[in-house]
Amino acid sequence: MKITEIRELKTEELHSELDRLRRHLFDLRGQAVTEKLENPNRIMQAKRDIARIFTVMHERGETGIEQSQYHL
Image (cartoon, rainbow, N blue to C red; front, top):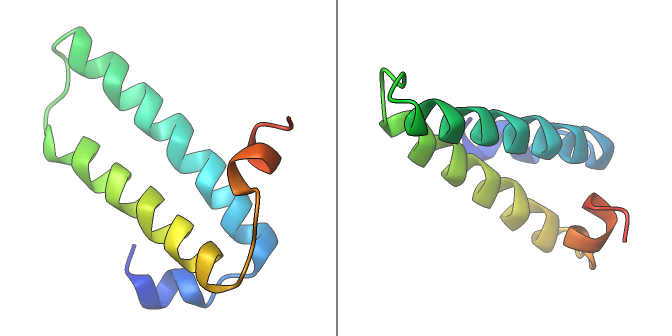
């Protein structure tokens, strides 16, 4: 995803996208361990997308993102 696409999303959509990307990253890491990952660059791309979402959330002034994400 590009940063302009992420900035257009609502806050609730950002949280759901963040959750989806974290699950996707978890799956990619599992595939990497079992050596079934076709493109290792997908892990790096997923991490960057997660970082972009965090950047937009911080720009919007959200606090406690990690705590609300994990329901702590």
